[in-house]
Amino acid sequence: MPRHKAYVPKGVIPAVLLPFTEDLAIDETAFRAHLRDVTSAPGLSAITVNAHSTEAASCTLDEQKRVMEIAQDEIGAALPIVHGIYAEGSLEAARIARQAASGGASALLVFPPGPFTMGHRPEMVVDHFKRVADAAGDIPIIAFNYPLVINQGYATEMIVKLGEAVPTVRAIKDWCNNPVQHERNIRVLQGLSKPITVLSTHSAWLFPSLVLGCGGLLSGSGSVIAGLQSALFQAVQRNDLAEAKRINDRIYPLAEVFYAAPAVDMHNRMKEALVLLGKLECAAVRPPLSKIPADEIARIRSALVKAGLLEHNHQRVAAE
Image (cartoon, rainbow, N blue to C red; front, top):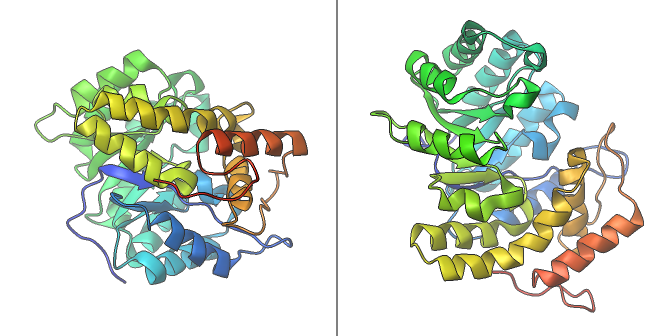
């Protein structure tokens, strides 16, 4: 399997969706088309599979393997593939990591295990990541950093310790959802002698997040607006804030609808957006997710028009 061995997680990394048929089987043809569509956007550094956006919690280990095989076949030669490690326990996380490594993953996105919702000690965090790293070899790891208030997040000092204890931890997907902590993560982690890249996943407020100095972004909404996210990141990197603001004005209406409460529906809404854009035929999601109501789909349609991705007559127009 192709693997981009020199890959260091940074830049613009969309997390793709996983289309299903009406009977909730993986729609492999639609998934291939979706991969080609997302990766046609310029300026991407990788894509992510088997994460929240691909409904990993509802996919078996064999299905995750198949998702990786399809992604490798379609775009693996062109772009690195980040493989999510979503598991309740460390032994299962290591098992998924071993499978991902053998499937050619160029990096791993490690979710916090479910028991951490009840709290955790530093040695638990280090042990969890060591087990994943030992199973995956030298593959770079991205630690998914959740908000501290739900106990699955890591304080800045914990991430520093984690990077020291597990050298393959090279980046975080930062969803601390606290601008003060987010800026501190950026300044401290990217200022280390061996930097840990901060990839923003604050997609509801991506522009101000990137301006703070993130080394990239990893976002499920990249499944719909990879081109706009790439253009925004490049404008911020050039310090062209006027252009960045213009692009953000297009992104903002979609961020409002995608990340409205309840947050569990965010990728559900993105599937509906792709249906409206004519890029996906079916917006089916696996339970416990369920189809969103018609009035919410209407709000998504309106946001696509405001973003300049859909004409008022509902015909798709070119995106950046």
